[in-house]
Image 1 (cartoon, rainbow, N blue to C red):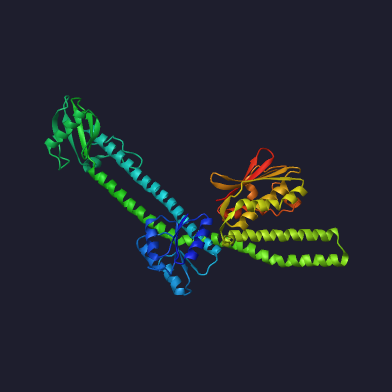
Image 2 (image 1 turned 120 degrees about the horizontal axis):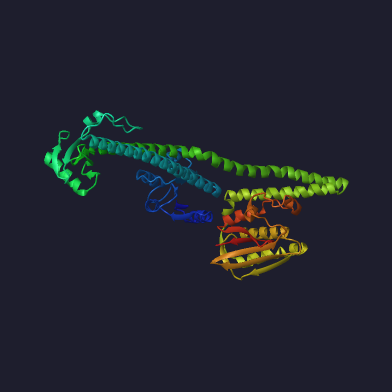
Length: 519
């Protein structure tokens, strides 16, 4: 997704641009209103973020000129003003949403995503309406063309067989049309020319047409006969040449089809105009309803995130009370396996809530507030790996590291350290006894790549499902190892926040490998 961001404060623009880039948005940042207007008119943007207080042209002026020129790109207004009038004016001018300063970065990201979802809803809806109208109008005009062509052929054949009249016993066009009779011959505009065996005209009847003389009729007929075709077209006439009933020569009937073609053209134009009106009405309805249609989805997602956050904070208090009561119970009655179970499960629940809150913060974009910097990835990964040597040895595992020295990247060191820690902790917990954990850090195809491989008793058939929250390849696995089922979900969320990728793959029959590709 490509965004245009107009902000006159350089420090603010740089921070917001970096965060948007980390969330896979391509951003063009400008510092005044005139530049924003020029970029918006020359570029193809999925959305525009406008600060109202811009030099040269205000954000409201830019918005007004864009809407007047017919540009319907979604616009999110940022304002430090708290007056309701400014917000109403912005929305009346065509803004899709507004956000007052100061704002949480997570809220900005959520509003941008909601704004783009509305545009996607409109585009998808209009694509469906356009396809439906094209099929409907094409079908109507196609059937009209077929019916008109069929009726013309039937009338022309009937006139040729009857030499200018329609025989009473002649069958009509059947379905979609009345039977052919003398009235059809009376209303048709045509002329007849008799030809001898050599194709020369011997008689011309132009009594049923006023715009063609006998000489012109003869010229038409002899030209058609010379072409050697039994039927065809000459100018505005469709013709048919049939043997005469007396067997001496042939009869050429020329039927004027210009009125029918004009009628078909009028039907086509009117249907296109009606289709265009319906399309515009559907577009207006989609634009008006898009906010209402997508609001329940956005609100549901936000409520889910808020529920996790609120529930996490609310559960902390009873967990603390349970732990305090367990300590008091041990103090008065001594330690027992029951009290140890209470303590162990309380600690597990506490860890689970911490991880749920971490995921909620990552989903809201909160982790992106950390400052990015250039740092030594090699040193950081080596330091993180050192922390897991003793746990690995205690579990009967060997940790081998192949780290290319002096690899640097730009990002948040704390996030990468947590990502590497989660992957190593996962390897220690789920490696087969007596196995080996292989960690490799090197530059591959221009990107710093971290690979962690380990053998496990039963590698999952679908390794990517390991990143699903609370996924268990083995129903008893999480309980027996003390895991929460959220570690790898957090690892992938951290990778996405860093603009990196994290994937899992099965290697052979017994090994699994996690690969994180950084900048």
